[in-house]
Image (cartoon, rainbow, N blue to C red; front, side):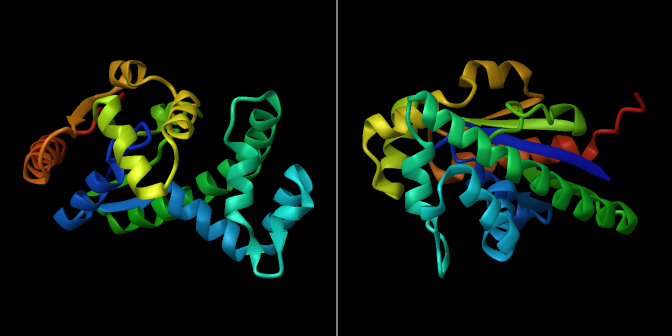
Length: 206
């Protein structure tokens, strides 16, 4: 089995790339989706998050995501402290969940399994993959995409971008870089080229 990491900055389109790889037949797990599943389904995790950043984020219906975003996205030290507190709770659980799924696919001899994670490099997971794909796009395109889909201001998008490694850093670490600044057809062609290369490459014995 080949294990591939997919990463990129906010608005680069890594989720779109992940979807194209699923269509191709790859198994792809998205860290954001796994984190959301954990936060929605585990009351003990919800309570731990509430204790860490404020009891008012927990409602009878579950966690208030809008309130959480207000508390963790910002430039102040307190925003950063709250964000790191949530990450400390959630990241190990996401990694544990993905590891269990990977073990199942190893037993099934699944050809290609990928993990879509925005913070792959930031939390030091890159060495766990056979190859890492970085998806990139110009900042102005990224900002426009995120503003349109999330109703955020430009300043809010830039603040979230600043919380991640720069795209120059991510590109320098990557095994493959997919540019996502053109049409969907152009992106799909680039994804298929990279996927074809990975599918025929041998796994290093090192």
